[in-house]
Length: 86
Image (cartoon, rainbow, N blue to C red; front, side):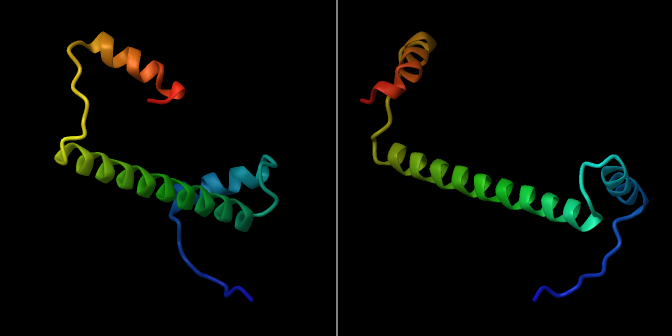
């Protein structure tokens, strides 16, 4: 069973939370807080995934596996055709 938490959001966030419930966006303040935490967790997972992709790309570049482009047009053409596979 979940344990109850007690914390203070401050006046500005208390007002936002109250408005979300008052205008029917959420049934309770708890629902609104849970939705916010879910959004934060999703954001953190996306950031972690991007960091891993950057690290992988940096490793490939360090191994000489990068592609050099002569012009920005050739880079754009490659990016636009990326779904066709290389």
